[in-house]
Image 1 (tube, one colour):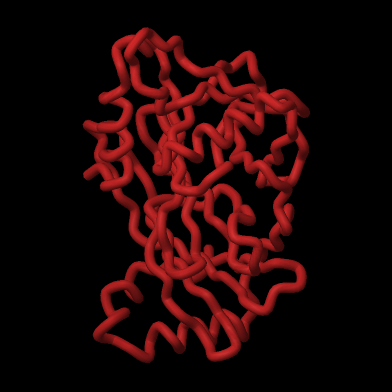
Image 2 (tube, one colour):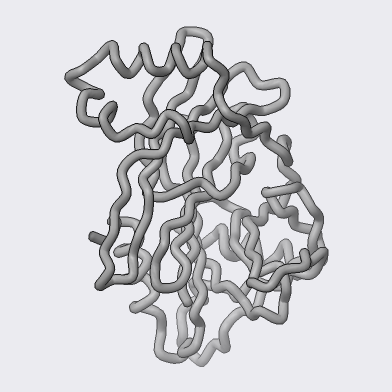
Length: 257
């Protein structure tokens, strides 16, 4: 069965104005100044929308002044271009802008996207590793301590593939553990759910489940909790960005063909 996030994305793409036929990649964000783009401008624009329309205008002004943007996955500097659709008389202000960037492009046989921000990330690189015996034992004890809450979850967790994510000088450690696999062959969909825990000074806390595998970790809050860039296998692109500050929540998405 398709996830709620992917269904929402499909609905959003289906509701694009007919005048924008052929716009097959779209990104949306709840955060100002946060957008998706292909690393090569030859791959075309990603049409960016925001929960708050004022954030779209802020980003367009930023790009028009020639100010740089920064790829959150590594902190690399780029120049951005924001293309607004043609506006006819009496038409409302545009709700999306076609975003492209100019800067370093890695050698690859496939298109490469990144998440960009108007300011450089405080943490451009996160330390990702296998948990040591003490970390893993403490997490397993935490999950085993509450059978009513974690009984069903415990049976699906794949401890051998768990990963820790840390800021170099951070006080907290995020642990991501794979869970069940979900497939819908008719919809060309397949993904493995992953469960997120955070260890602080008082022990572990369970944050919740993300719909797919984290591909990378980025700084979206300026603290020691990473944002998770999550991919699901679908007929095209199904990528979402999840934040942990204040609880696990989706803050952006990217999709299309």
